[in-house]
Length: 128
Image 1 (cartoon, rainbow, N blue to C red):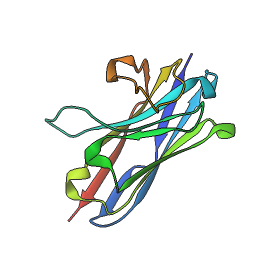
Image 2: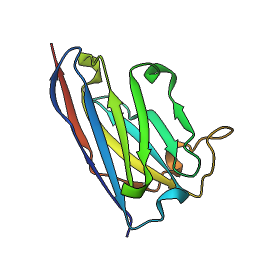
Image 3: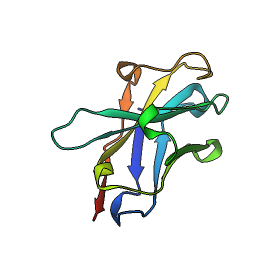
Image 4: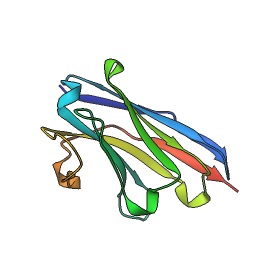
């Protein structure tokens, strides 16, 4: 079974940084795209970023460009999300998910419904 374990969340002050980790098991890592999403209470889930473990290509949702960086360590089956200059509006539960069978993200990116397995989420709280 595919399993995803997200970690690294916590309480941080405005302007601080966190690095989230997503460890995947039960899959051939380089055949998947890994995406990061977040959902705040009362709001819809929103995409942050995704990375192809096939060629390392990345995609960022427009509102997320500049402060978030996604990276992957294929031998460790781990994808990271570095978050800098955090703001109170970044407070949310952050999830990682995988989409199978994608190559490069240079032309197409998975739609949210194409992510088939989701981690349990890690809470990020930014205090002012």
